[in-house]
Length: 96
Image (cartoon, rainbow, N blue to C red; front, top):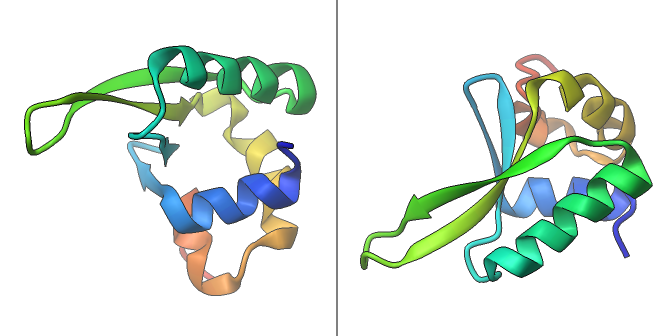
């Protein structure tokens, strides 16, 4: 089940911040599975996100979830209470 706590843990473990957006690594998920997660993020938590295509080092195509810029504040509201301070950089928060 995707909850603010589970999303916080997922980002802390498999997320990164780039170009003012948080990306969740979902390299082992199919595109269909990634799209299902994106729909749940939208419907359940109000987070708009997109699948981004990436080629991994062995040449395989993998998919990741990028939280849209206009949903970043909502994401922070939901997950910051569940983050450890040392991981806030994955949301673009530099000071803790």
